[in-house]
Image (cartoon, rainbow, N blue to C red; front, side):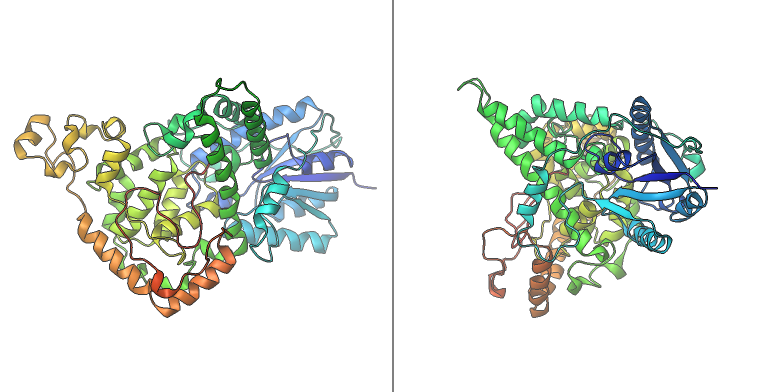
Length: 529
């Protein structure tokens, strides 16, 4: 007896119906099953947490409703791959497997290779489609920007308006978080998933909120409203990068055609900045695509051994819990725990402080932050964590003054007092460094340092100088210069500048509190959109 033939669409980080070429092409070829697989081994990894699961489930529930409206259905499985496909192939003739490419962590990389082996051995044609600017395989970085632009301006994939499904099929049920070993549902102020919500956020940003994007994205006070807040929707594919970019282009055209003097001039600079962030988004993902080992290894291998053997667990725990004695660091970490999002400048501050002040190796701190970032995108995340830790070999070293960040980004203490309530009554003049308050002031405001709020876990100037000396002792060696050439050729953006300064021209770092320092060779990235 002949088995039913199906076209199988495998969802990964593409939880939408619009601009989804795999769904469109599969639906044009016969009975179609659109499937998402919850992989227990993936969910057991420390980078993922319950909010990620909830966001995905919300997105899948909306996608399920959209599929039902056109005659389709969403299939759910819990299991490992390719085992799930093996079991499915025992009951159905899988005429074709369709999916988007994914630049994920080591687990998904190995899993995709296992699926590819299964498909070859089973005679199943697996069609993989691009959905962003990541090029696979990429021979070299020259010309990458042109490829990105060509992809972003290509036509949006047509949307399916009718779908045929198999007459007999076990569609499965959505698992609970507990089934995957996740914690019970948490009461957090977290963005909700779904394609409709993604489009609402894009619309509100382009039409209203982006006017102050360039100025407002740096401060944790203004960033929640002035940043795009699209990053989780792009990370999990509720919105395609192409849709975001073309929406931006349409908005810019609308503003250019508006009557002279009727438009706030801030729009143009802000939208230009946002456009560059969309390109940087894919630029950093491309790094992991080209060198998967950077998830675990220093991009520049001359820094191997710099921090690995000096990990201080006590400092790590203080940093994770937001009890370092540095108000901006602690407020950012506590805000992140509640909201699962914080703006890029504060992400850079958190990572740089952990690596340079606390001298913690970037891998454990990066994994902790990944768990707390709802928009965790492996390519962006691990590249940025290394960049802020000084292990890329091609970026200016950034070591921020946590006290100056308070003065620059939260001068009235609005953000700090919201998330570190023990500092609520501390006068503004002492908020950057509460330990400098006279004892009579500490008693008056009810915040005795060492009792109600911790002393600084390290001395800023001492830690800064030690990090500066140790990093640059390596950076100025001939081996480091040679390694920087290799890293640049593989990962550097192709800006119009002398790509490889002579060894003697490499400057020593200056203590800066912002992100406006020039990079030696590479790139700048103010926000994960």
